[in-house]
Every structure is written in structure tokens, then in C-alpha cells.
Image (cartoon, rainbow, N blue to C red; front, side, top):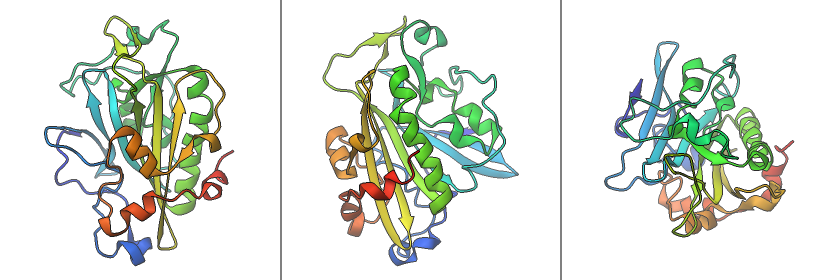
Length: 267
């Protein structure tokens, strides 16, 4: 089931472990979401999980470029494990989304992989939720080297963070530079020049954040070399990330860069 309104959603995450800084707001804060501007209509993917209506992930889709502008979700320790398998799942348009999308032939023989923004491996907790990550609303053209290189290292790090800290909040998406972009396929799907991922965790009543930016090319990249503060990323992409954090400390949390805290979760 998919709902196309951002109102009245309840997050599955619990902020009780961070009472020192989170006591002024409730657990339905949807901390993973960037600020949503007037006229923007995110697509919200919900699934039935053991009889509970469960938020899987949220997409702000860019119909002009036929790729998501951003994808956001929280990943809990429970959700980081599961039995759902990728198997024969394949990308296809979301016929219920009401937006123009890429099709499989746009990517075929293009030289680019079908790159998940919300990775399938983060949704092993529910087979329907994993299926929903295979919509073209969640897909961007990525080079094979980037997709299977440092970008995949960060995706694995996210799952290890969820298992260690209990919950990690994730927002990720493409970065389009300039006014002219390479496109693929008959539908002219835009190829992003770069990609970003920003993470937020709570550790012993303190909040920590990190961001990553990687080039969408075949040059070798590293997780360490891709790190920057969330504030620096916000200035680069023009989004207000983790918008639902209280303003009283959002800026301090987003201005930190403790590389070693994060790198110990990279394999």
C-alpha cells in the first residue's frame, strides 16, 4: 500500500534512548525527512508487516529528470535483518505513482547500472518492502565502479550502524551539476554527476551526523575521501536535511565531522 501524503504518518523509530536531547519531541518526528517545500508531493511506500502498517521509505521524485530527487528512510536493528531475498526481483515502473518514469530499456546497454537509492538489502525485513525498492521511482543511473565500490561500502556501513546503535536515519540522492546533463534511453533519463548520502544516529543521548558525496564515474573512490559535514552537503545541494530535528541543536549536530566514529563500521 502506498500513501501519497506526508501527513499523519508515524515513524517506526523510537527516540527514547536519546532522552537527553529528544525529550522535547515525540517519536513520530520522521527525522530522516528533509524539509518538504510547498507544492512537493513525496511518494510514501508503506507495507503491511505482521498486521502493522509500516513505513518503508519516502521518495521525492523528479519527473523532469526521471530520477528521485531524494529518498529517505530509517533503518532499525530489527529491519537490518530478515529473510527476504533479492532473487528474480527486477526494476519496473510504479503504475500507481501517477508520474512519468523510466523503463527498463532506458538502462539496457546504456553503460550504467540501475542504482538503488534505498538499497534492497536494507529491506530484508519484508518481501513486499524489498519489492518496492525495485520501482524506477527509487532508481538512478550509476556507473558499475561507483555502485559496487565505495558507495556499496557506505550502504553496508548503514546496516552495521543500525545493528549497533538501534536506528540510523538515512537520506540519499543524486546531485545534478550545471544545466546540461548526460541522458540515457529513449526517455532521456538524466545521469547524475554525483550522489550524496547523509546519516544521523543517536549514541548515549548524543546525536551524530555524517555525509558522503561520490562522483558518478569509474575513478577509484574511498569512504574517507568522500566524507563531509551535513552542513557542507546542505550548502552543496540546497536542501535542509534532517529538518525535523529541533533547531536548538540541529546546526551543531550537522556541523560535526568525527571520521573515526564512522569508519570503524566500514569493511
